[in-house]
Length: 384
Image (cartoon, rainbow, N blue to C red; front, side, top):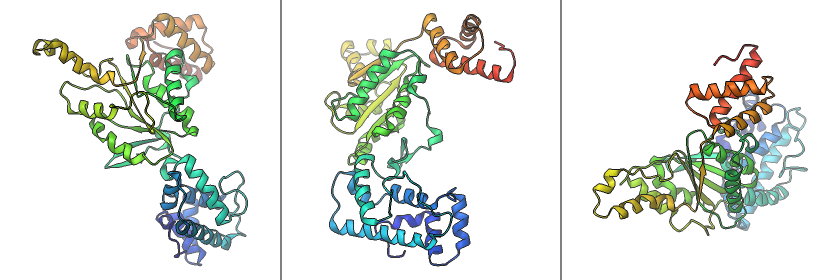
């Protein structure tokens, strides 16, 4: 397969490189070693098609922009596909080589022309390369680096109890975003443990199949947001640039960077990037009495400090849970866990837990019910 042009990047994959050598009768033992290492021994053709699908190349990038590849590029890509499919037939009698059903866009006969046509439509909807299977990324050295699936939060919306109004505001805004309608950048603020970050991760899990992705940015990289916008500008997917636990000091240069990133894109934004920040403070820039005393025009100083949070088109407050709300969340989580503990006794224990741990919150409620569940599974008493 040394004639490959568009798909030459596949040779960087050790399994594909070993497959190439084995198809010419060279070192088949290494191929089977790589096959088992990749966990693809039950159906190599599916793995081969997956490698083709997620390969980032000139064809996939052009299609993701919604453009039609040139005749030269299309012919070269089809030729590469047919070359790979032809090599795979060397092993057609091997039990490892059975293309399973339900693997679009490679269902049916492995024909380069038909697969290329299917892939053109696929990339235009689902993006290309690393964006196809990964939900979340972080920015490093000018690139978006995928976050492993087992390192992203698996939380689902129905697991987040109460805060229905807050979740609806956020969900409606995200639906507008992924539907190409006017949307707002969002600031979520409130006390620790009220579910601000969890709500965003749950929305990501809910709408991943609709093209939603997340890019984590820490406060040190706020100036990189314009660069991130450029990186994803031609991508058909929708990206949340997520800044968790944001707090800035007065005169911090990062404040200006974030203002610039938000400027002009509050309601009415039509690009594919939404900025979402969480904070324990409504006013992200810290203020003090000294700020007012040392300013010739105190009101101007305060206005400047508040202008950053005002640039978010949608601000959602996650208020502290009172006793009734806290116990309601505990009860719902207990039902999900199918806890055997008497609900009246559970409420007493939950209040004791909040007292020991320093307050009531959805996070405390989850920690408590997880602890009770573990005790019940081990058959030991709940000791608080």
